[in-house]
Length: 78
Image (tube, rainbow, N blue to C red; front, side, top):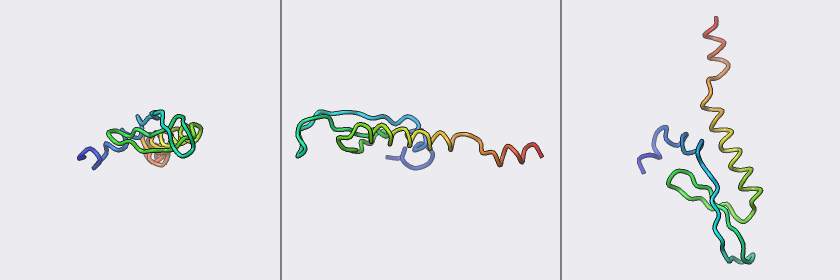
């Protein structure tokens, strides 16, 4: 669990993925989607579109924090 403290969470967000499992639930049989975030598995439900959009948002936001900000770039030029 020590990898959850510090900066490793950023790496997990950049490489997270959707995993699928066939289940029989109260809504009937079918796929159930999970977010695999490092060693953690987080249930997302049976809606593939939601799972894909959530994954995209997590990766996009994680990538935004990996890039240098425009403020630091502008201050370097001054």
